[in-house]
Length: 450
Image 1: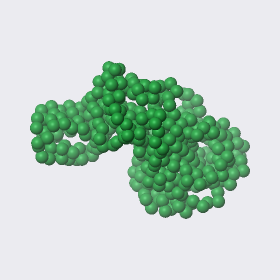
Image 2 (image 1 turned 30 degrees about the vertical axis):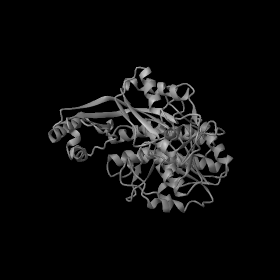
Image 3 (image 1 turned 135 degrees about the horizontal axis):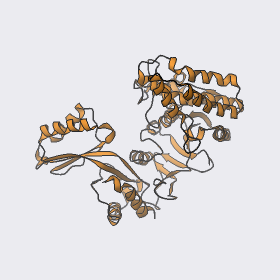
Image 4 (image 1 turned 135 degrees about the vertical axis):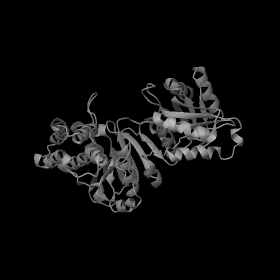
C-alpha cells in the first residue's frame, strides 16, 4: 500500500487536479491521499493559505471580510465546477468559509491556526467529492476521526505517539482515504497546525501509521537536485539518497522538505519517493535508510542557509576553566535559547544560533549576562553569517574531500570563518559571509560535480 501526498502546486486548479486524479487511478496501491491547500496557479497568484491568513487578520481586527471570502470561495468553486461537482455539494464548503469567524477559539493564535488549517481541510473534502464524481471509491477522512492527536501548541504541534495505534486501524480500509495535511487536534478538540512543511509531516505520519510500503511525495520537480537549480543551470539529479543525507541537506537549506518533515517516515523505515505531478512517469528521487555505494560522485548534495548568526567569545586559558561552557549554556537555557553548533579552541568559542530566536534586546541581555558570568576578553555577535554543507554517504570512504572543498573556495576568493567536521562522517560544514554564500555553493558544485 502507498501513501501519497500532493503539494499546493499540484492542487492549484481543476487542470492540476485532473493530473492528480490520473495518478491515483494509475496505481491501485495508492490508497491514502494527503492533500495541501490550493497553491499558486501562476506567477503573481496567491496561495489559498495566504488568503486565509489575510482573512484571519481581518477577522481579528474586525474589518470587512466580504472581498476575501469571495476570493477564497472562487478558488474552490473553480476546482469543483471543473469536474461538474453539483452546487449542493459545494455549498457546505462555502458555508464553512463564511462561518469561520463565528466559531469559538481559545485565543487569536488558535483562531489563526484554525483559519489556516481550513485550506487543507476544505480542499480534502472537495478532492474526495471529485474522486467520487469520477468513479473512485473514495471518502474524506478528518484527522479527528482518523485518531490524530497532537500536543497543545497552536502553530507548532507534535504528533502524540498513541496516534499511530489509531491510524493503524485504517490500513485495511476498502476506500481511498483523502486526508487533509498540515493539522490535527489537541486533546481538547482544538485545531493545531504543524510547523513549516506541515502537509509533508502529515504524509509521513500516515505512512508510518498504516505501515505503508512507500510514501510518494508529489511536487513540481522531477527529482531532488544536488544543488539549488536557481544557482546552477540543469544540476545533477539525485536518484537515491539516505534519510541522513536528506536531514542534513534540509537543515542546511534544501527547500524540498522541512528538516523535520520526514522524521515519522524515518522512524517507520518507510521508503520515500519524491515525484513530479506534471511528469509522474519520471522515477524521481528515492529516500531510504541505506543506498548502494556510488563511484560517480563523492558528494550527494550541497546546500546553504543564511538564517544563522554567531556569538564569538575569546578568553585566555578558556580550556583550563572548569564549568566555563556550563555557565554559558545555563544562561541560554534561562532565556529559552537553543544553539545549533559550538566549535571551540583553547582560547576561543563560537556559538551558532538560528537567528530567528534572537532580537536586539535579547542579544544585549545575553551579552551582559555572559560577560558578567565568564569575564571574556572579547565577545560579540555576528549576523553576516551563512552555513554551507556538503553531504554524502560516500564521503566517509574518500580521502581529500576537505582539501578539495577548501581549495575550491580559496580559488574563488571566499573566506572561511568556520569549519566543522567530526560529529557526522557524511557532512562537512563551512561558515562564510552571507555575501559569499551563493558563489561558494557554485564553486563547490563545480568542484564535485563537474
